[in-house]
Image (cartoon, rainbow, N blue to C red):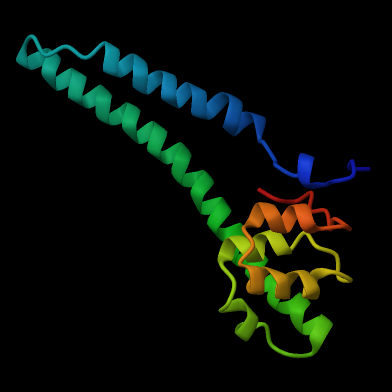
Length: 146
């Protein structure tokens, strides 16, 4: 049984990505930069080659994470459209155009009993995501986030 989720513990870390792949990619880039040698044409060529390789390793590890998060955000938007329609019987588009993506993502953690009121308050007071999350009384946990 997953532990109860709330504002303090909802951030998610993937140990393989956050504590191994990214540190190793940064270490490889730093190590490569520190070892660059421009004393001869041969060493210049090897330094540029390794520098590009190190940069690509870092970029690929960042890009895969970025793609996953962007896909998750699209799914959240669809989830919120369906949820809003379920709760109100009307489309979400008007409200959606008044909210930022970050606000919509924060609102998804609100329970059905408070989401509509919190949504209106977010629009009216232009709440930042952190304020929205802190305003949630009954946390709607999501243990499947990326």
